[in-house]
Each structure stands twice: as C-alpha cells, then as structure tokens.
Amino acid sequence: LNITVLSPHTHPLNLQTSLDRPRETWSKKMDFLLSVIGYAVDLGNVWRFPYICYQNGGGAFLLPYLLMAVFGGVPLFYMELALGQFHRSGCISIWKHICPIFKGIGFAICIIALYVAFYYNTIMAWALYYLLSSFRATLPWSTCTNPWNTANCNRYMSSDHNVSWSNSSTSPAEEFYTRQVLQVHLSPGLHELGSISWQLALCLLFIFTIVYFSIWKGVKTSGKVVWVTATFPYLVLLILLIRGATLPGAWRGVVFYLKPDWEKLLSTTVWIDAAAQIFFSLGPGFGVLLAFASYNPFHNNCYKDALVTSSVNCLTSFLSGFVIFTVLGYMAEMRQQNVDAVAKDAGPSLLFIIYAEAIANMPAATFFAIIFFLMIIMLGLDSTVSLPMTHFSVKLHKSFIENVSEITLLLFVRVVSQGGAFVVKLFEEYATGPAVITVVLLEVIAVSWFYGTNRFCNDVQVMLGFYPGCFWRVCWVAICPCFLLVSGMHSICTLTLSCISCSN
Image 1 (spheres, one colour):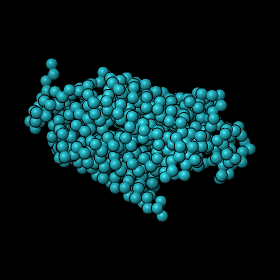
Image 2 (cartoon, rainbow, N blue to C red):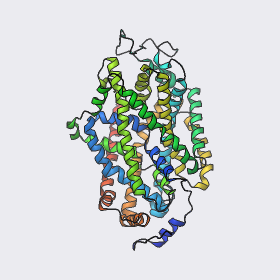
Image 3 (cartoon, rainbow, N blue to C red):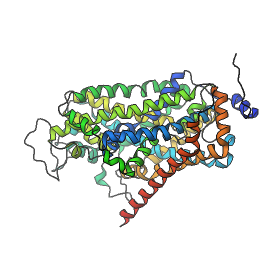
C-alpha cells in the first residue's frame, strides 16, 4: 500500500496528472542508472578533462573543478532528474506543466541535440574506420611506406634510435589521420568541402544502423544496450591503465598531470574552464536527464541517483587522466622530449594521433588498438543513443526516429566529405557551447523564478518524502544562474575575440 502525503502547498491537480500520465518505465533500476552514467561519461571525459587539467594547474585544478561540481553541476543535475520524474514528460511537453511561455526551450534543445549528433556520430565513424584498420598484423599508422605517406613522414618508433626529427617532420599516425582517414589535404576549407569519402560514408551508415536498432523500441531496448556500452569502457580503461603504468616513462606523465601549479588559480580562466568542464561533463540542458527520469517510478529516490551518478562521472574523468598521461609520459620518454611537447594536441587528435601512435609502439599493438577504438565507439554510442529517444512521446517514437534518421543521414553525408573535419570543428567550437549554456540558464530561471522554488521543492517532497535543504534552494535560485551567466558571457566573449582575430 503506497500512501502519498500531500504538502499544503502542492496543488492536487498537479499531483494527479503527474501520477496518471501514461509513460513507459525502465525494466530495472540499474537500466536507468547505467543509462545516465553512460550519457554523462562520454568522449569528453577521455580527452578533454586530462587536457584541461594539466593546462590549468595540474592537481591544483581539482579544487575549482570540485567546487564548480558541488555548487553548479550537481544541483542542475539533481534539478533535471526531479523535474522529469515528477512531471513524467520530455523536454518539449514538460513546459506546459511548468511555464508555457518557455516552451521554446524544448525546441532549442532538439536543435542542439542535432548539432551534437553531427559531432559524435562523425567521431564514431572515424573510430570505426580505425577499428576496421586495426585487424592486421602491422597497424597502417605505424609505417611510412603507404600510398598516402609523404616525404616528410618519419617512423618514430621506440626501436629507431637514429631518426632525424625536424619541425617539418610528420609521424605516420598523423598522416594516416589527416591524409587517409579525413583526406583533409584535398579540401581548401569550408567553402569547398570536396567529394565524399565512401569509406567514412559506409562507417557512418553502420553507426546510424546501430543507433537506430538501439532505440527503436524505446527504453526497453536502450536499457539493455547500456549494459554493454556503459560497462565496457570501464573494463578497457582499467586494462589501458594497467598497461600504461607498466610502460617506461609513465611516471613522467603522471607527475606532469598532477603536479599542482597553485599560481594558476589566481587566473579567472582556470575557474571558467572548470565550470565549463563540469557543466559539459554532467550534461544538463540536452533534455536527456529530463526524459530518462520521466521513465522512473514516481517515488524513485532521484536525489540519491543524482549524487551517485554525478560522482561516478567525476571519478571517471579523473581516472581517464591517468590512462592518457601514462601513455603521454611513455611517448615523451621514447621521443626524448618533454611531456608538454607531446601533449600539445587536444580534442580528437589526442586520441587519433598521439594515443594511436603510442599503441603502435606497444607489444600486442593490434589487441590494444581494437579494444581502444571499440571503447571510443561505445562512449560515443552512449551519448548518441540518449539524444533522439528523449524528445518525443512513445507514440511518436518509431516514426520520429525513422524520419529524422533519414534527414540527418543526408546532412551527415557532407560531414564525411574531404573537408568534413572543418565542419566538425565548426560545430565543436561554435555551435553547442554558448547555446547549451543559454538554454540551461533559461531553464533554471524558469523553474526557480517563474514556476517557483517553493512549488518545485514541494513537488520533490511529494515524490521523495523530504523537503530539499537550504543548500539546494540557494543554488537553484542564485548560485546556478550566476554560474551559468558568467560561463555564458565568457564563452560568447571568447568566440567573439576568436572571430575578430580570424577576420584580421
């Protein structure tokens, strides 16, 4: 017998419509937790956090990172889970229950999700190309004797002690990535993308097929898929960590990663980077958390879920730093360079050039290449599968997936052209950051100031049996909006200055 105790401030109609609204549910509680963890733990945890960490003071960066998580990221994470679970609606339909004037937020989220899909699906197609290329005794990015190599290619392997390395030299891993996979040398820029790479087009089609069959029956299907896609990356990270720790020079990378530079904490850029990293790592604003929580039982303890899943996400980022920097330390030892010279690349090139080259130098290189690029695909799938299934009702689910998949596949064809890397870079740097921050800023204002913090807290009390504490209320009303406003203004100013410098 379930007895619900109503708060004197809770409108009975709101509670009744929330309980009666038909909604598909998760088969198991663990399906939900793995889905949220899989969504939050993505490619950014593997390459962006380690790079941001060493760039902003190493171990000293953990202080602003944790503060931003406690006062900004986790409260937003908790708020979205509670909203979705109480109103049992996705990111579009939920606004008719909260504040209809803000319903444009839901449509903006759908557009942003399409931008992110451009980015993640393309990177997974690249990883799939690498995965298929790994099934051979000699990895193709370990030699300079391939048709795509140039005269500047130098095979910089651990066994080659007499290599003459100059500023114009390029590694076989770099040439494989830029000249064979991306073929970016055949395109002058965004104004002329060039012809389609049929290899990448087939890889992208295969990725779309996997995504489609992962979500075509809703949470019943995706809840089972995440048992593989959310757990396999942790197994691979553990294997790579053990292997990296046994490589010569690994300690140099770890010291470089964790050595604190306390003076950098005086820079506002460090704190802004910490805010941006925790925000994009936990992922509020994409509608995924709202929709995932809407499939939960009404009295599920989403407060505990928010603390557990956000903690797992932050610890995964920290663990990924060791995985990346033990290998970077090994590369520095092998090249007889400083770690900062090896770790100068950020973004996808850190994975597809530096880490791929390190794998080519390891014993059993084929095995490590297969599991590494399979992990990259799994990390991308977790986030990509989450995005389309969150925005529409179950009744529209299959038709929506089929129609949008066809339209986006046509758009994605340009991303796998010879200049597709320029398009990916455009979306990565300009399309998502300020837009997502603006959406979440409007969302927290709509909930805290228009819907009302007291009403929202009463909703939480009806669901969970306790009233959110003063800390959470202050964060939702004041700290989180300030946190988002400063981050958004910094992002816009950075992009503006970047555009001005490019035009000059």
